[in-house]
Length: 279
Length: 319
Image 1 (cartoon, rainbow over the protein chains, first blue to last red):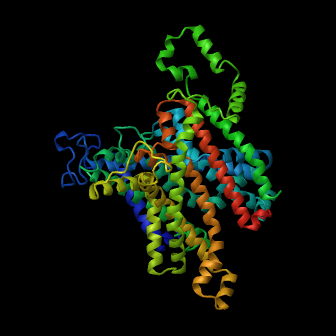
Image 2 (cartoon, one colour):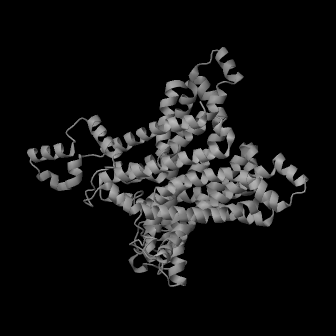
Image 3 (cartoon, rainbow over the protein chains, first blue to last red):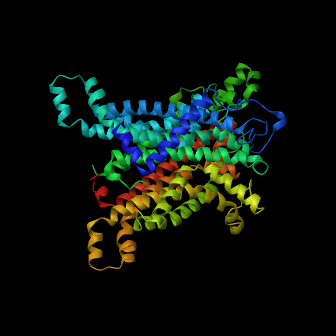
C-alpha cells in the first residue's frame, strides 16, 4: 500500500501506472474477445476504410477492424511479455540465489554460463533460438526469457553475496532455520525491491523485443494479430492507409513508455539514491 | 586479482564458451547437415552416397572431433561454405561488414552529438522547463522502437518530400561519399534516435552527480566561470558512464541492426543473418552469430579497458 501511494504521488509514476492499467484492461478485453468486431473477420466490402464511427481506427487490406486487432494484439504482446519476463525472473532468481549463496565452483559455472549468454546481443540470441526451434509464440517466450535470465541472475546474485554475511542470516542459522527457509524467506524478501524494478523495466524491453520479432516475421504468426506484425503489414500500404501505421506505432510506443515511466518511478521510490537521476 | 587481469584472463574462456554454444546450438536443429543442405532431395540419396557426403563434411566423426575440426578451421579464418551463396562464409560476412560498421559509427556520432549536449543542458538547468522538455523527449525516444521511427521517416520523406531513400544495393563510401551518406543517413538517424535518448539520460544523471561533488563546489567557490566549471571540470568525469554506455551500444550495433537494415533494405550483417535463418543456411547462420558475438565481446573488452583507464579505482581492483 505504501508503494502504491508513493507511485500515485510520483509525478511520472502515476502516468505510467495509468497507461499500464488502461493497457491491461484492453489486453484482457482483447484476449477474451470483448472487441468491437472479431479481429479475424474480414469485411471485404470495407477494405482499407479510414477511421469512422463503424471502424474507430479504420480497416486493413483484408477489411479487418484495426481497433479490434490492436486490442487482441495488446493481449498477445502482454501474454508473451509477462510469460517471458516471468520465466526469466524465475530462472534468473534461482540461478542468482544458488550461485550467490553457495559460491565456489557452482557460482563459477552458473555465472560464466550467464556471461556466455550475455556475450550475444539480445536480438541475435533470440534469432539463434528461433533458428533452432522455429518461429512462434512459445519460441518468442523462450527467446526473450533467454535474453533476460542472465540479467536477473546478476541482479539477484549481487545482493545475495552481501546479505549472506549479515547478522540476521547468522541469527536465523543459530535458531536452526534450514537453508531453504533462509533462502526463500530472508533472502527473497530482501530481493523484492531490486527485482520489482528490474521486472518492470524488463517488461518494457520484452514488449519492444516481441514487437521487433513479430515485425521480422519471427514472432506471432499470421493471421493472429500482433502489434509488430501489424506494423510490418502496414509498410507497403503506408501511403494509402497511414492509419495502419499510426495506430499500432502509437500503441507500441505508449505501452513501452508506460512501463518505462512506472519502472523509473519504482526505482526512485525503492532506491532513494537514484531520486531524480533516472528520469 | 586486479580487475583488469581478471577480465583479460576470463576473455578467452568466454570466447571458447561462446564457440561451444554456437556450435552445439546449430547442431540441435532437427535433421543432419545433408538434409539441411539438400532439403527434400536428400531423400533421393542412396545410403552409400549419404555416407560419402557425411565423410566429406566430416559429420561421420564424433561430435567433439567435429567441434575440434570446426574450431581449428575458425582459428584459420575458415567459417565453412554457404550453401545458398556457394562461397566461403567469411568472404560473404566481410562483404557485408563495412556497411554495418559505417552505420554503427554514424549512429554513434549522431547519438553522442545530440545526447551529450542535451544531457549537460538538462543537468545544468535541472527542474527548469528546458530540463523537463529534454527528459520528456529522451523518455519518448527510449520508448519508441526503431522500426516505428524508421517507418515514420520513410513515410514523411516519401509523402511530404517525394524522396525515397536508396534501397537494395550499397554504395561504399570510397566509391561515392555523397551517395553513401544519402543512403545511410536516415537509417543512422533511426538507430541514433533511441541511442541519443539513452546517452541524454545517462549524461544528465552522471552530470548531476558530478555537479554535486566537492571539487566542483570548490571550483565554483574559487570563482571559476560557470561554463568553464561545466565543460572543463565536470564534463570529463561525467563522461565516464557515457563511454561505457556508448561502447556497449556500439557493440550491439556491430551485430547488425537487423530491423533497421530490413526496413531500409540495406545489405548489412543483421539482414544477412536474418536471410540465412530464412534460407536455413546453417553454416552462414553459425558464421554470422560467431562473428557478431566475437565483435561484441571485443568491443566490451575494449570498453572495460577504457573504463579502467579513465577510472583508477577499477584499474586498481577496488570494484
